[in-house]
Amino acid sequence: MGTHFQGTAAEQQALNTFIKLMRASDAVNNQINYHLSDYNLTVSQFGVLEAIYHLGPLTQTQLGEKILKSSGNITYVVDNLEAQDLVERVRDSEDRRRYFIHMTPEGRQLISQIFPRHVARIVEVMQTLSLEEQTTLDRLCRKLGLGAENGS
Image 1 (cartoon, helix red, strand yellow):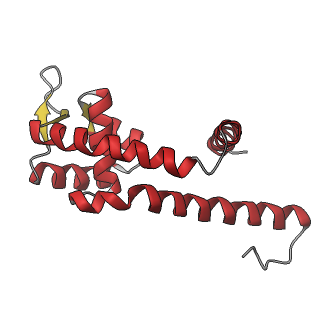
Image 2 (cartoon, rainbow, N blue to C red):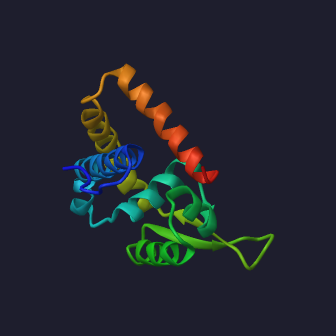
Image 3 (cartoon, rainbow, N blue to C red):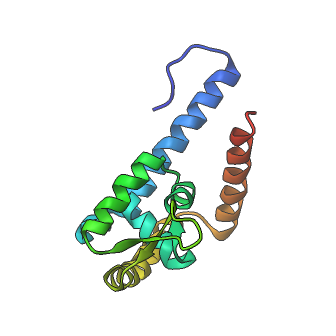
């Protein structure tokens, strides 16, 4: 269902495209991330574990930038992961005000168990599009994201 807004043709097209983009994003996210509850993880918690798994220890600020969360939200996410013994905060030896978030052996074991299933699910969902369509969507999403960041 598109917009019922009675604006210009350009306004209606932009609104309809935006609505479809948001609905598609929600549907894809739901299909890909539903299994995380099996591991008692939120999408944000999984994002933190995945970032550290692939990039190594990061500060909370770096994690927030990687998974697009505010500093307050990242603190909450890290607190919960720490309570589950999946990550630990380690004080930076050069700047004692800063902490790096490290994965514990339990966290590494969990993410190495989950990640292959997660990737397989992404591939399965994305196969709705041909490789050429995926490449086009990739290019268009990047263009749209960069345009939005630059205020256009």
